Image (cartoon, rainbow, N blue to C red; front, side, top):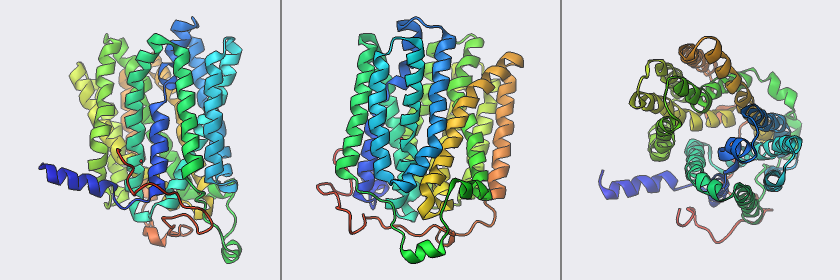
Length: 433
């Protein structure tokens, strides 16, 4: 492709998005650049502190449980307190708890603080997604969510590489660096992002019922999407929980697994934006059905892998599913969420991933130990098929986005009462969890 065409494509991918979005994107990127603890926590506990693998697994489970607990609470805070206060509380709490975790020595204290870290770090997700939906036009949301997802993966790819070098120098340094960078995110939010929660008029309050968690639970179509999100999350998490165990049992080394799984990060960084340009205005029902099938059968094909090259090929298949699914499904969640209840709806959606983070390791371990890895990959193909049928069924008769009940077009600028950020163009110079 000519250089001029590449420049035009890049410009079209980032143009038209409000500057508030780019500050939120920057906050996400900085946050993921500093995500060292999740990468080396197991190594820190087993190699540096001398604890067993069982204890390391328990700490990881408690970290995930903290995310489950905070998902719904953070969604309620996002609607009641606002997006900006929730982000400030979540990111400040994450910075403090991560720093504290680095100084913990007692096993009970480590487990307790890891639980707090899980709660705090997961609490920002409903607020980020709700704020993004508030400030980006409906027709640009898939592109915006895709750019945000790209920032998450780019940041993680860089941080996971740097984590190894930092761990060789000092594990404590990794904890403190993550704490500092998370606090930088909180400062960016405080200085550059005004509150984006839409203000409801008296007429809107009278005509639209208040949204509570019961409202979300009674929303059958949305809860169906949450259930399907849980199934897809179970699949995608097998890349980090089922795949390394299966490759190890087949005689492959950790380095072999690292080479195969690296394909996932590389493809997302390289393909996320161009693929999004291709799918941006296509039928979301078809995209979600195809992504579910690609995910299910991508992992299913792992049963036939006997070399690193074939393992890498299966990673390519389900990574393409991830690239298509992530922005499309997030856009669908926003589309089904009433404007004044976005926080609670996003909290429920976040909960599906948090619960999957708990279930996926148990599922893969049980199936591999009891039946063998081939059964795990066969189950993945079945789950992907069920999810595809579910998406096809749930999205039949879904009204066009502008006709969806409860979702009104949102302004791309702050409300007149909020001061608009200054000093930044529509695109962050030099450059977007």
